[in-house]
Length: 305
Image 1 (tube, rainbow, N blue to C red):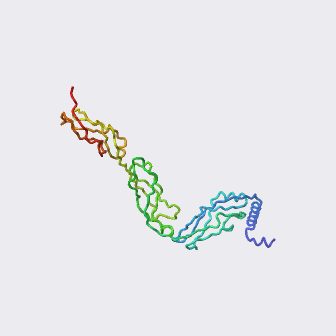
Image 2: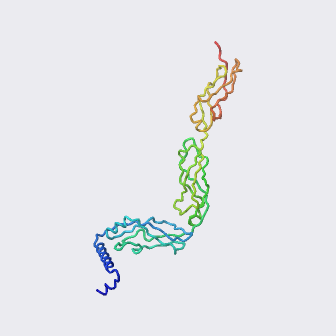
Image 3: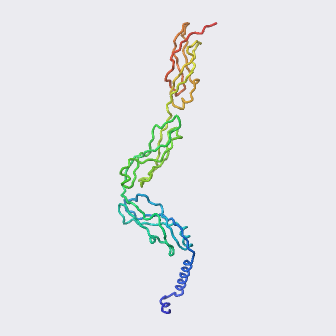
């Protein structure tokens, strides 16, 4: 015993105190009630080889089932845990990582009982760069009476990098769907590229704008029952009403009424005999005449009493 104490060298009292505290802690932990729970551990891949990218389904985290002293397990449960996988020595191709209880640096007394998913299957692919056009993806249709004339993006192409197998056959980069249902005019709106499940990154982080040229449709309508007016003097007209076909932009034509159209004949040279007079039509601004049916009326002067 004296030899053992002598081997402690200087500061024997402090060393003995530390030993006693460690023994007390060990007995306290070993005698503590044990509990079982699942820990969620984020995966972190480090030292990835240059011009390589991980493809395939990469789990966001591991679920590690552990048993251990309640105080230690509760502390682990409240801590953000990360499991690091070193990729420095790996080359292109598929790789399988088997995780065992010794893969984790948990405190003494904590035992790993289950790991999910396990094993991890990852694929390393060489990366390339490509410049591809952007294709705006459209959802829905403009409101009634309006139509999409043209859709484009600014810029119209981007340079992306990603795995060779994914980029080799890619023809364009789509945007997220752009809703057209409320648009009635030329609109420029911000949008994002939709990489879907591809492992792509933009070379330059620039805003993507979609330019949507929405225009009113051209509408053709037939207005029946338009009265024909004799001008400047009165006359008996047959027929007294005609059908007028008009066209124009949808907002101008959709609510047009027969009263908004003026049809008239010139009675200045009308004699006592019945004459065939051409009908002239006056329309609101922005509305054009397609046809008048009939285009002529039979007119005679009204008899005076």
